[in-house]
Length: 166
Image 1: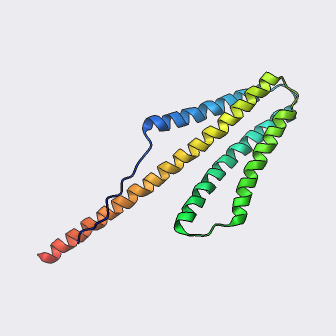
Image 2: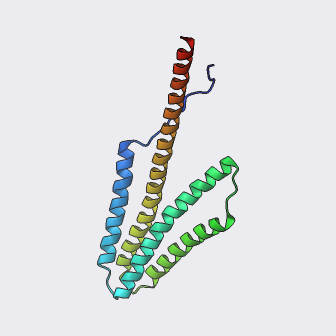
């Protein structure tokens, strides 16, 4: 029995794109770490900013996953927990808001503040891109495994038919 379904084509990001995403994320982390390491002022201010940057970074990955899961849930018709959505978006807003507030209230040179602000936003945007790239790779791996499973199943069915015909 022949199938009318078209074969599943698994698309993957190119190695160049993956390298660019990882390099961009690495540069963003380096720039933020450099800015925070040489942050003038009190140790408490530095600690607050480091915690803010780490909080923002972790909420980016959680938000990326939640948005992707929400899309998958909409496709499959599975209901999502509204409170989870509130927690995820609220956590992201709090992380960004507190870090921005901390950056604005610090008594540092405006040029230094601009450097920290730009490096922070670069970190956040590159983390979103990295999260998407990692999730795409995972989905491509699952797609390829599904195709291999289907092909193995078809081959087994053909072998069984051939054995039964003998």
